[in-house]
Amino acid sequence: MHTSFAGKKIVLGVTGSIAAFKVAGWVSALAKDEARVRVIMTQAATRFVTPLTFAALSGEKVVSDMFADDEGPEISHIELGKDADIILIAPATAHTIARMAHGLADDLLSATVLAARARIIVCPAMNGQMYAHPATQANTARLRELNYQVIEPACGMMACKDEGQGRLPEWEQVREILLRHLSAGDLQGQRILITAGPTREPLDPARFISNRSSGKMGYAMARAAYRRGAEVTLISGPTALPCPEGVRRVSIQTAEEMRTAVLAHFSEATIVLKSAAVADFRPETRYADKVKKDQAELSLGLIANPDILQELGRKKTGQLLVGFAAESGHLLQEGKKKLQKKNLDLIAVNNINQENTGFEVDTNQITLIDRQNVIELPLASKERTADLILDHVITLL
Ligand code: PMT
Image 1 (cartoon, rainbow, N blue to C red):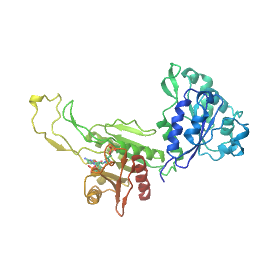
Image 2 (cartoon, rainbow, N blue to C red; image 1 turned 120 degrees about the horizontal axis):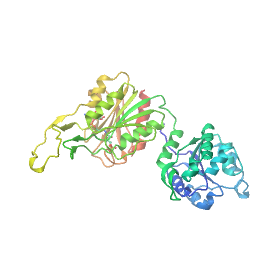
Image 3 (cartoon, protein in one colour; image 1 turned 45 degrees about the vertical axis):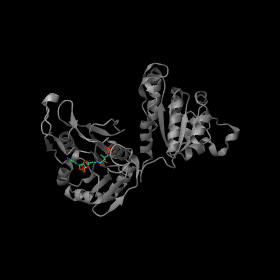
C-alpha cells in the first residue's frame, strides 16, 4: 500500500500573491506524478499568472468565477469540494486567510473551502510585516482551530526586498505533507530506527576512509516510514541530504559513533532498518596532526570495526530487524548467509555491479530475502523501492 499521488484529486486554490508563479511548478510536478489537479484562482491571482498557464500544466479547466455561464453545473463549489482528497491553498494571501478564518463564502474558492469535506492545507505567503501582524496571526490561529493545516512560511528575502518570515515554503516540504495526508497510515504506532549513509573513519584531521553511499536509500526509507505514520529516528552518516520532514535525525561520523547512537535508540524501536554502509575497517592509528608526505608509510594498518547489525541480532527482544547488503555477485547466497549469521528477519540485497542500482543513483533494484520467501522487487526509484520494502515489512509484523 505505497503512498503516491496517482489518481488523487487535489484542488489547488491560488490567490493574489507574486508567489503564484512558483505554484505553477507545483502543478507541473503533481501532474507528472499523475495527480488530478483542479485549480481555482481568485480574481487577484489571475492578475499575477494567467489561468491558461495552470490549465496547460494541469490539463484541466481552471475556474475562478462562481457565476460564469460557461462553467456548467459539474464544477460548482459543492462539486469541487466534495470529491477532493486534499484542498491546498497556495499561495494564501493575508486577505484570503482572513476571509477563510471568518467563514466568508463570497467567491468560488472560499465557498469551495466551506463546502469541502477534504483536508485543507494552507500555505501563507506575504510580506513579513503582514504575516507578523496580530490580525494575520489571530486569523491563522483560527484556521488551526478549525482543523486546517497551516504550513509556516519560510524566512528570507521576499519579492518586495524585505527580509522576514513570509516566503512560500519549498515544494519538497509541501509534497511530503501532502503525501503524509494521502497515506494509509499503516505504520502508525511503530517506532522505526533507520541508519543511512556512509561512515567516515579518520586517519588524520584531513583524511578518512569511507565509501560511496549517498544516504539516498536510507533517507527515502525514513521519508516513506514517516509518511505512513511511523515515528522515525534516523542515524545518519555524513551526507548532503536535508533532514526529512518530521524525522528525528542523529548525525554521526564513524562506525563507533553509529554503534553508540544505534544502541541508545534500539530498545525503544519496534522496527530497525539498517541501510547504512558501515565501514568494515578503520585506520589502526588516528593521527592528531596531518601526516606529511615524507613521514607517510606506504602501507596503512587497519583494524576491524564492530559489526553493529550482528550485535543487534544478538540483543534483539522482539524488534523486527532488517539488514541491507551491497553485493557484487552471488546475491542470493550472500544474502541468505547474512540473514542467518546476523539473526535478521529480512535482508534487502542490492547488486552494486548493475547500472542504476545501489550506491549514489536515484533508482534501485532489491531482492528481499526473509526466512520463507525470496522476492525480486522491480527496478524503481528509491522512493518507490522504500515503499515496497515497507509493504513487505508490514506483512512480517
Ligand atoms: O546510500 P545510497 O547511495 O543510496 O546507497 C544505498 C546502499 C547501497 C548503501 C544501501 O542500499 C545498502 O545496500 N546498504 C548496506 C551496504 C552495506 O554495508 O552492506 P554490507 O553487506 O557491508 O553490510 C550488511 C549489513 O550489515 C548492512 O545492513 C550494514 O548496515 C550492516 N553492517 C555492516 C558492517 C558493520 N560493521 N556494521 C553493520 O551494521
